[in-house]
Amino acid sequence: MASTGTIIHGVSVGEVLGVSTLAGARLIGGRAGLDRIVQRLNVMEVPDILPWVKPHELLLTTGYPLRNTPQSLGTLVTDLDERGLAALGIKLGRYVDELPAEMVEQADRLGFPLILLPNDVGFDDILNQVLTDILNRQAAMLARAEEAHRALVQIVLAGGGLREVVAEVAGLLDMAVAVVDPAGHVLESAGDAIALRAAPAMSSGDYTVVPVVAGGHHHGRIVAHSPAGAVRDGDIGILERAATVAALVVTRQEAVAAVESKYRADFLRDVLTGRGGARVATRARAFGWDLERPVGVLVAEIDPEWDIAPDRLLTAWVAALRRHDPRGAVAGFSHEVVAIVGSGVDMARLAKDAVSAFADCQPATFSTGMSRVAQGAELLPDAYGQALKAARVGRQLHGPGAVAHFDQLGVYRLLSLVNDTAELHSFVKETLGPLALDEDAENADLRRTLQVLLETNLNVAETARRLHFHYNTLRYRIGKLERMLGNFTEDAHLRLNLTLALHVLRMRGI
Image 1: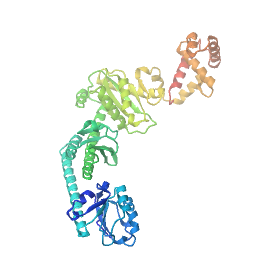
Image 2: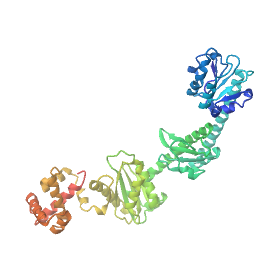
Image 3: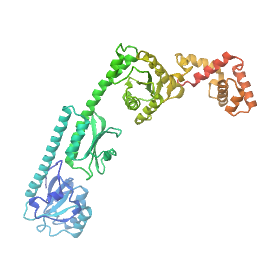
């Protein structure tokens, strides 16, 4: 027994039959398997060959190991097929006169090629010629892949990007090629754009997919579309080289973007803290921002229960802002994203679109606050404070994912200034007494009645209508509330305290 060892690439069984030393060979079974790939050759002249064979081998034999056990020929094809062999070549006449019909039938059923070898050709000649063809094929593939790699690296060294890389690969392979991001969005493509729009996450059918990985991070994938079906091994090698180069391009772009983002964030932080200097408008124009017009400020904060990288939030806001106000400013700070947009922009709609762009990070959420209109860059620090306050108070009022405008905060702006939450709790307990707790369903119901009474300015008829109570029922409840809380129907100061206490209860996180 002798084997040629492992080789990466190979040739099909059909191509092996075309070499000159096998000119007299005859295929006697398993024609459907002619496209099986031969990567190594092996000679079987010992009886216990099966433990030693390997996938993609062309096994050659004179039948010597089978001379005393011709009955084993019937199961030999099945055993070799299960081990992934490419084909079996056998010489007849010296040790085995003929192959049983069941062996040929089995080969046809499994698509396992059975080759009758010419008796006048030595195994060494077959080994040498087929191995030479395989090595030449592998050398050609490696040379082609290396040439492609040099061309792709040269693109990067010349300052090219993903567009040039994709165009080069598409030309080399004569296929449609695209680079897509981790979310499946096409970044650059060349060729059949319609086919690439449906690029799958894994290789299947007419599509071959190679991941783009750098630094242990998944940056997307390269997708090649070939209407003819699966690509050749050599083409996959070129796609793998292209994926490596694409990873270099992506990491380079990310590094440049990170530096630019830092400069943008540092400048915007100076503007929002009043340290922008006298040339704010001029410096802003260098970033493509227009801060000379009336603008509004939005602040988006990732809600505390989520541990999400801030750059994910920034990416979502950049995508949303690009559609609403190309001249708007946006930058990411340590825990928030700040956007400055023209006064004509629908800020609520912008915030909603940012939530949609953030969908890949769900169930994580962020809360957004919006400021009043600022008439100049010097008023941006005040507007930033307003937006920040709206984001935080809005989260207290409405929970995670809240969107609030500063003008909608009302008295909650004042309540949010009280840093001593224990004092607020004490005020609520002293003012509402047992109504401050939800342990009793009746007390919670009475608190709801009190809230509607105060909202309607003690209009009994309107309160009864809203709560769907009979007039006399509501009168009874008012009496019970006054026995618990005091004569609030006649004491304006008590009504004010009750209203404030109910507002504090509504603020979450206090």
